[in-house]
Length: 315
Ligand code: NAP
Ligand code: 8YV
Image (cartoon, rainbow, N blue to C red; front, side, top):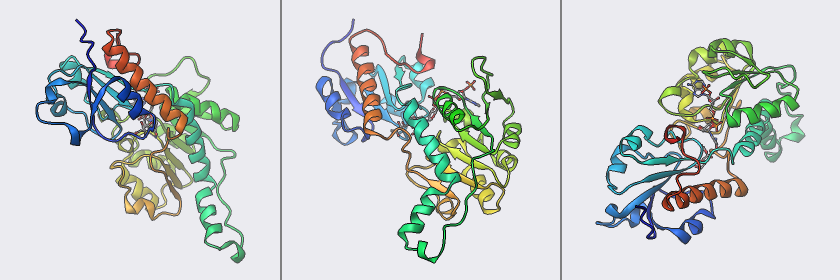
């Protein structure tokens, strides 16, 4: 039978949505790591987690009454879903509500990288304009874009790219029958064929270093890499080397392997634009994500099941 008492949740750390804490506090007792007292672990029925904070078997083992892990974010690579399933624990995430926002940011990052917008801004602020005009930049005109991943967000990016008048190709494991874009089953072949790679696949073991030295080599000296997925998807050492040797032209990065640490080497390149993982980072979209976390937890504890379970836990 469902326990209807005010459920106790463990939150793995701070989450960047001002509305989330009060919304959770309305329905649940939320314990932060520093507030968890001896003897309370046995009462914890849910975990609220966020990107970059591991929810592994060891953490779940601390909470014998655990029923659900609600992840604030669509990407749930920091949650050990296999371990959760072995423990009969539901895992939820926040798909769809952030697609358009992340797609906007992706286009912004792409344009910022190819047209060197942050560099031009620095040029003006540093008072260098009177010395002469800002150097000319590469162009998006006449170039092809290869999507690495064409799911919810990738598709929203591809649709925007149609408006920019550039051909779109994509690489996924499964060819989609419902899109007009050309599919390539081999990522190196795709990289050879396009000028820009936009990475939007999930993180985790399956995609670790999917974008490796061979892919970067194939992208070529005029090629541009945009990564909004997870830092783990790109071999950062290979990326630094490709930039150092001019084997690729530029990179725009919203995500990194060891966030919030960004390798000094990456920041030393003038042709690299770095962002602090802000793909979904607006008031409205973070609030929508927070609301979905709350809805998942409320539905679950009311005995109505999860609203947006991760695919492994659905059905
Ligand atoms: P999604 O709808 O599940 O789409 C994932 C896409 O990746 C699918 O097209 C899938 O196609 C493809 N894919 C999965 N594994 C692959 C592999 N091994 N090789 C090639 N393609 C693969 O996910 P989404 O909602 O678009 O989100 C994508 C990711 O973006 C999230 O998981 C998250 O990590 C990241 N994200 C980042 C931010 C940010 O702030 N920077 C915000 C939101 C999301 P197949 O299954 O056919 O391979
Ligand atoms: C994060 C994200 O959730 O949804 C994802 O997978 O990467 C982002 O939306 C956000 O940065 C909060 O950590």
